[in-house]
Image (cartoon, rainbow, N blue to C red):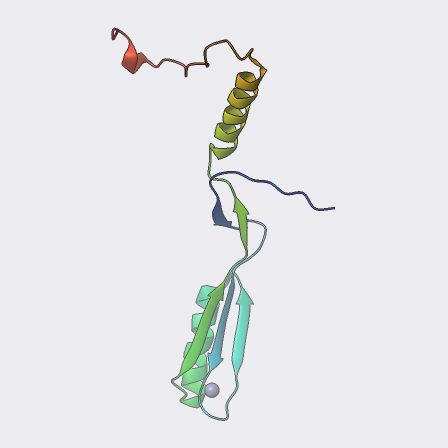
Length: 112
Ligand SMILES: [Zn+2]
């Protein structure tokens, strides 16, 4: 069973439970050497340096990747809950009552 969530604002963040992956592939014709490591950018660069030192190969393809998770930005869940609560309170009022006014902030104090 899947559960669907919906909020107005979404964002993506790097998954804190998954390590980033660095990979380097030698692109010199006929070589095919490659190096892939989790959480090891310095090691990947060191492998490239050593491969060049040992073979004279100068061309590589380098990739970096990490898992992401989709979620709401900070505060969005609370804002969505408050908006839903306001709509529910508005719907529960008798139809001849005036609509609920938003809470008055300090910026409006002293104004008519
Ligand atoms: Zn190579």
